Image (cartoon, rainbow, N blue to C red; front, side, top):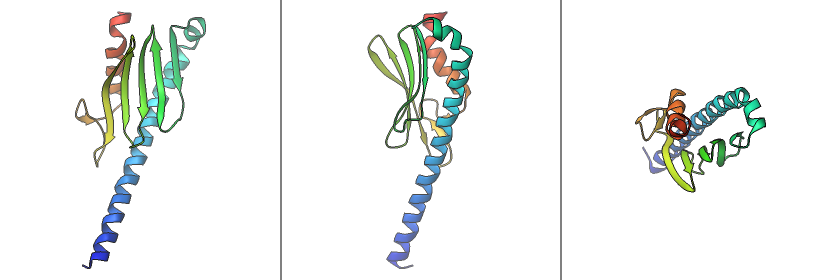
Length: 135
C-alpha cells in the first residue's frame, strides 16, 4: 500500500471516529436535556414561587446546556469544545468536577464510574449534589 493510500485510510478512520463520537455525545446531551426538562415540568409551580430552585436547559454548544440549582447548590452539565461533557458541582463559590463523559470508541462513558453513561447516573449526580441539603 502506498503512503498516499495509507494517509487516505487514516484520515477516513479519524473522520468516521470523530463523527461517531460527535453523534453519540449529541445523543447523550439530548437525553440529559430531556431528563431535566421533565424535572422542570414537574417542578414548574415550585420554581415560579421561589428563587431557591431553578432549572435551566438550552442547546448551547459548547457551554452549559443543563443546570439545576437548589438552595445555592448548582449541578451543571457543560459541553466542552473538545466534545466531552463535564458534570460540575458548584457549592458556596467552590466548583468541583463530579465526572467527565466522553466517547471511548464504542460508547459514551463516565470517567468516574468507568462504565457506559446511562440515565440512572443522573440520579447519582443529583443525590451527590442535593442529598445533604434536602434530607
